[in-house]
Image (cartoon, rainbow over all chains, first blue to last red; front, side, top):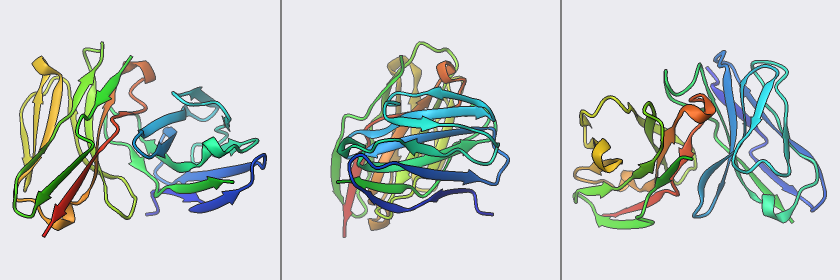
Length: 114
Length: 116
């Protein structure tokens, strides 16, 4: 059982480049979300989705795009990377929300923007 | 708006000491859920506990215990007889109605260092 899978685990970008962080889950979870973790800041919500075709912004959405075309996948796109986007990114999923259970997290993707 | 405050940035203890990690939260919801996650040096997030706002019973799981007090909006976590393997960053988190209980608001975390 793979759970929540994030790729790549490590990535170095130059300012202005674009890339997509992939997130896939095989647990048939409806709810998925992206967080970024910066030193001393905890985890902050970027975007989230409560089902295929439905997305919404979190606390720090600027510079990121998402879409949810399937239940399994929730990619996070950086259109023009900036050094401020250097961070560790976590994808999470849950079956039907925290009122029924926990969030399951991927192992994280460490992104460095030079 | 929701907010979670973990006032202790870093705690250092010697093995076998008891340690309490504090968590204070703010929410206007009457129904909400509180969580603790552990992040060891390897970086993954490990789920420890989930508690709903209607259940104020304290919970014990082995060396871990949690004290939930709605009157003070606190959800503190105690490790009894700490071990080196407990060294990690611990996050307290809150989930409420604004996101349909689909996401978490995290505190900034408390780094626990347990030395032998």
